[in-house]
Structure formats: C-alpha cells, structure tokens
Length: 188
Image (cartoon, rainbow, N blue to C red; front, side, top):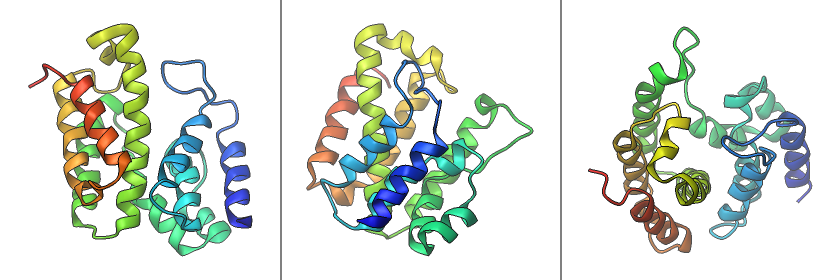
C-alpha cells in the first residue's frame, strides 16, 4: 500500500488548511471518509487512492496530469470522473445545474464499477454531512450551498443513486438510499 500512503500524504498536503463546508472540521476528513466507504466495496489500491484524491483537481491547484505522473493513468482517470468542469466566468451558483448535468451524463455513459464505487463513496459522505446539517438546521440548511433549492438537490442525488444502482447489494448504497429518504422527505 505504498501508493495509498503516498496518496494520503498528497491529499493532506493539497487540502492543508481547508475546512469542510458548514463545519469547523478539516476538509481532509472528507477524502478519508470517502476512502473508508470505498474500502467496504473494494480493496483495489487505485480506487482507494482515487478516493483520497477525488477533490484535489476540483478544489486545489493540482492537475490531472500531475496525478497521472504521480499515481498513474488509472488513478487519474478515476479522479477525472469525479471532477466537474469549471466555468471560471460564472459563479458556482450559476453553473451548478450545468456542471451536475454534464457529470451525470458522463457517469451514465460509464460502465466501470470502480467509477460507481468512487461516486457512491463521495456522495454517501456528502449525505452523511447533509444528515448532520439537517438534524441541526432542517431544510434551512440548503441556504449554505451553491444550489439552495432542495428540490434541485434531490433531483441530483436521486439521479446519482439511480446511476450507481448496480451497487445496490452494498451496505453503502442502502445507507445512501436511507439517508436520501430521510433528508429529502417531503421534497417533490
């Protein structure tokens, strides 16, 4: 697991000083949680490395080429599936729907189980955070996100669940669907 250790150090360095949205927790806890969830479905080192690194291209100055050089084609390809296109001329609020539609199109066109594992792991970690926020703030929690309409959030997370439903035998997928129903109860 030398590559995994290297990925953990790389992610720690890349996310140094970052804080998770709506908490005082170090951001790095999210990639480690994603890797932990992925490890319930696979022991493939490249998938676990990609789980640790899944946000470095999107949220830091790191590039896919740098990941390819450091960790190989497979890790870089997996991270690319988790990386939304950026629209620097638009605010994150303005580009939210377009970024989600494009990402979902890529996910639906994919038939790689490892990509599904990575997506489910990331989104389940998000759902766990949502559940904690929902417990504290109820539906008012959405005002802190780039998309504040809970119906749009529900659309996206439902579409992700459907796209990765080939993992429905996993405890992670069952937890995801349970949390979805809890968080989006009453949302059309």
